[in-house]
Length: 114
Length: 114
Image (tube, helix red, strand yellow):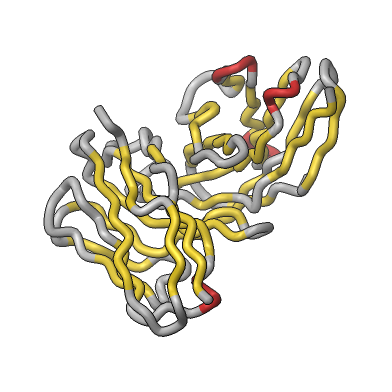
């Protein structure tokens, strides 16, 4: 079975700072990778996804993530954060073949200080 | 499309009471699932379904029942509520196509069991 680790539980940044949130997964085969965002009081929204191809994927709101297969990592980045990026961020994984079950990390709470 | 809808948005139950959380989607998705979200634990899969008439257990199924009589609906039943079931519950759905398991989430139901 797959698993996901997000080691940053709470990150606090000032506006305009650069962001990198860590995500590592454990699984022996090919995977799909996702980052979801949950703004305060709202449901999860897909930020970006990786299925295959270019390991650098771009998502909404200026976010991007890089899949490094050798490191089993899928870190989320943004060059310059805004106050409106305050939210909880979840990394998730599914096996590429025959299994839709998403496995989530425990989430990283991001607080942006104006 | 309304996407994934959930009712109710909030619910308070007494220990031992039963209730059903409703989930519906209008995207003709084959796969539907229920998660619970607890602080510091991310989202954990309760039950899922790959089509009408087919359901299976996820990571934390105890105390919950599901059925899938139609493609659109996937209700979650709490048989005898316990304080440990206080949580936010999310329903999600997706297509079943290899390599494209992007899941869409409903707005959630916040359940408190006293």
